[in-house]
Length: 125
Length: 320
Image (cartoon, rainbow over all chains, first blue to last red):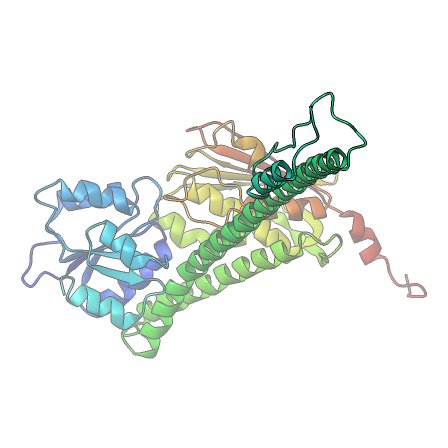
């Protein structure tokens, strides 16, 4: 990814590679550029080595570093802390889970295309 | 000592009726047992004694009943809790492939995906993989529903090449293996053919390969398939996180998980199903593992299952 204005980069963090690919297919078709990380640690490595994306789409349950652990590490890093995060979870308590992480926006799996595009278009909204 | 006065009797009765235990009419040693007041006092004391005894009995019975009901309530609450947990996990497991399936199909239907042939192919393959994952999940849930009823499962035995089957299932996992850059090798000298239930064996191999990828920490996975003395042997080895020694003996139990649910999804049924299916085929499955050193699962299956010979026997009167 390279720095561009407006920033069209999206980081997808999910251990299910099919979900990442489905999201990638949708977002790429809408002109977004996607990077994929399989867990929180990979996501942190990516963010530290690249320009910051417009949004991180974060799964909660992952091997290695899970969504919560990623968020904890993100928030203590001043460079990474401002990057908007959208939590993706199949959990019925999705809003509580997102709030626990200090995240306002969440996508409840199964995710609809319109919700996905809206969340990526306006991650802070 | 003279016989008790009527007032004394009333006083004791009033005391007892307020719930005081041990309230008795005092009788001296030298009372006249024939005196009507003495006899009445003795009768009242016996009555009080009997009432307290019956009260104690009733109390003990109630306490036992309450304990039993409390225990039953706890058990019911536990059943409800584990059922709710199972439903929640099942919903999560179903929602994962459904998410990909819905995105792919909605993307195609709305025309968002499909501007290039490559995109169309990727979306179609993705949707197909999710449908297969859902079939495995539904079969797993059906297996659980049937598992308590002996003989409920009917095996549809047919000629299956285990080497080919492993190869086909490897293809299902190919995108996952590729994305995770996991080296995957199948070692076999030739076809290993037996009479097994194809769909059930697909579940066995899918569960074991899925676990090897899921818990394999991105390290190489090897599968060896051989036949010896009419027994097929399939060994699946990963070099991932491994299983703690205290968990190892229980991994084939229903709902047993060797790992934290905060990090790894799954119904906790995969290995239970594997063992169930393998046993139904008259085979065995074993696990060897150490924490941080990966895991090896070995399945041994008779190439001709006990029921297979009956199934393949031609009907009476049929030409040989």
